[in-house]
Image 1 (cartoon, rainbow, N blue to C red):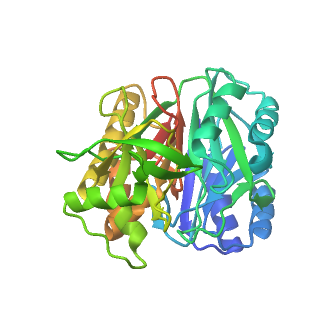
Image 2: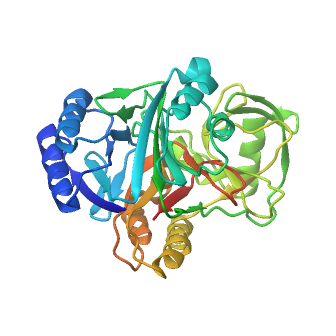
Image 3: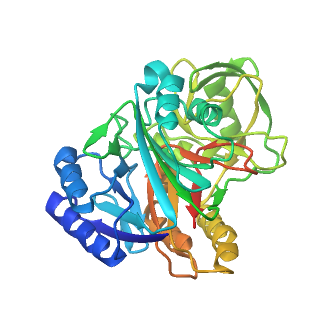
Length: 384
C-alpha cells in the first residue's frame, strides 16, 4: 500500500483537483481510493465530479467539525485529501442511505455488497452525525459483517454549528447516510484509541436512572443537570452561562465506569436542558455508573503522543509507515484552542510518514482487544 496526501488547500474546485492530480502523479500508479475532508460550505457536486474524473477511482469523505489535517498542516476552512494505491490493497465502497428509518437494513445492504479481495479487512466508516446513535451504529456493524472486520472512522461535522453534516460518496454529498470503504490488505492494520481524560481524586459515582435517546434525564433519581452542576461546584468549577457553554462542558465530561479498570468510556456533555437533562455525544444505558472526569490541553496533547508511540513504534520495527488515518474528536479542538497545532505535531511523532485526519462528532474504532467501538473526546488511528 502507498498513500500520498495533499492539502491543506483552499476549497476552490480548481485548486483541489489540481492538488489531487499532483498527488496521483506522485503515487505513480492507478489510485484505488480518494479521501476528502472538507468544510460544510462547498459546491460538492462540482468538486466531486471533477475529483472522480481526475482520479478514475472511488471518492469518499466527510465534512469536518472545524479542522482537517495532513502531515503538511491543519486547516479550519480548507480541504485535505489522500490517495491510496498499490498491488497489495483493494478498496470496495458502498453508500448506506436512510439510516434514521432503517439503520440495520441500510447498513446490512451496503455491507452485503462489499467483496474484499484480500483477507485483512479494515473498513473506513464515515457517518452523518445527525442520522443515528453511534452505539447503535457500531452494534449493527458488528452484527451485519464478518467478525474479523476491524472498523474505524467517524461522524461528520459542521464546524460546531449543529445545522447538518454530510458524507461524500463519488459524485455527491449526502445526509442521513453512511459511507463504507472496505480497505483490504495482505497485512493487518494497527489500530489504537486514546482520550487523555482522568478521574479526579474524590470524584463521586452516580447511577444513570433515566434516559431519552442521547440525553441523561436523571442521575440517582434527580435531574441530571442539577447533579452535574453540583458536582462541578464541589470540584471548584463554576459554569458561565454564556455562548461558550459547550467549550466549558467538554473539559468536564462524563466517564462511564468500566469493569476493565480505568479504560473509560467518555461521553461529552453538549448542553444542559431546562428540564434538567444533559445532552450527550452518545447514548448511555440506564444503570450505568458515571463520574465527572476532566482533561487539560497538556493531557490531550500527551494522549495524542502516546497514541502515536503505541501504534507507530511496533509498526516501524519492520518497515516504515505507509499510510495512516486519524479521526480526532471536535471537542478536543475546543479544549486545545490555539494549541491544536501542537496535537498535530504529536500525531506526527518522530517519524516522517503520510497521514490524514479530521475533527469529528464521534469516533469509531472497533477491533479485536477493544472494549468499546464508539468513542467521544478521543483520537483513533489506523495505520499500515
